[in-house]
Length: 142
Image (cartoon, rainbow, N blue to C red; front, side):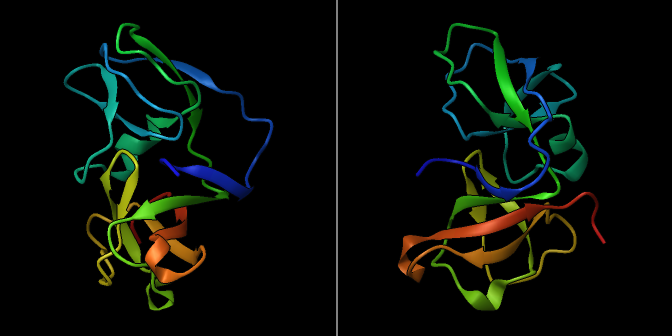
């Protein structure tokens, strides 16, 4: 599994969007965020904020590292996504706010992150050593 995959809910009528990127290869499911300094979308990092993600999205069609435009699926705040996590999944982490580790992994440290958390865990997929959880993106830190 790679990156973020919508598994339930959300609005199916929201169309994909084309956005500017640097000449970087991305895979379907990679999470991109806005870069205010570069004026493009870049790979999400642990410095991703709710507002930077609102300008970004999830790659809908892979790029080859030559093109400077990508088709993204806007983040659907009413949907549930599956995604890999840095540590074994744990049901005790449900509803904890978490930060993005990189463009296709969530940092599930077991500590609620009210400062940098941009999503929350709502479930687990398979056994805990699969390191896959279900998440919802947050509209704002609360």
